[in-house]
Image 1 (cartoon, rainbow, N blue to C red):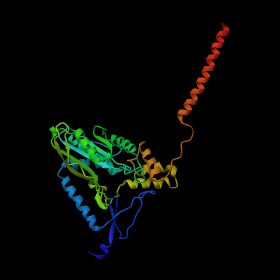
Image 2: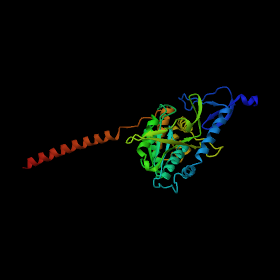
Image 3: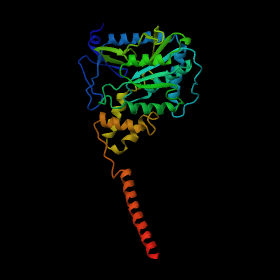
Image 4: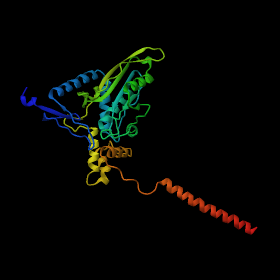
Length: 346
């Protein structure tokens, strides 16, 4: 190996590699963030690439998975007017797609992952499970609350005709083993054969316990569960499904940190009053509705450290109560005058 190559490392951020000096370099993903950019050697990069090929080889044995990925990319590209959304068929298996992620905030490739999971479930007549983590937030790298993410995703998936609690469930991630086993127990039916989990994840490497790991390999999946009524142990097979973070090899990588940084740049720019609109246009059609505003507000407050100005004037409730109080006082005085006038006439 060439000595110059041996002294060079690659900076991996969001799936992109580029040569930099071997001296450690750190970069914050947000103004108040403590998250560090990690370094990876050529050997580690080749190892990760080999792992991706290994997963894709196993995934290719399930033709419906590749079809679901292709359809999901097509549907997202057709937003905001997706066409020919695959319908749900009658149930035939115990195949359950699972997605685990922080979605801080959601972006295009998160949406492709979620739709891929739903289409796999529709192909088998089952349901997908989404577990949304918080990364210890709210903090600069994880600004969104679970409720904000859930509401945004339910609305976005509704554009494609996907129905919450029919096509998919959303739960807050804590102990993922317990959540997944509980979900499988609820959905399992012994007449449909063995249980297979399809773990949907990305190809971006992340630092976990001082080791670079693919997103889809970060968390282990359960290998069995027990049927409560009979006490029978049912094995679980897990198939990993990789969603690429780039539509083409040289295209931009979409990442949550990019969405956060762009929001901070706009709100600190020369026209902060138009920051939300400019940010929307940058990430349209992902953020093109009223559910985008809570996402933006939480990003700029937690990740950018920018407080929103308080609303001007009193609340509507106070004005309404004041109005009613005045109206009732005038009505009481008017009624008393009428009673007094009647007595005088009598």
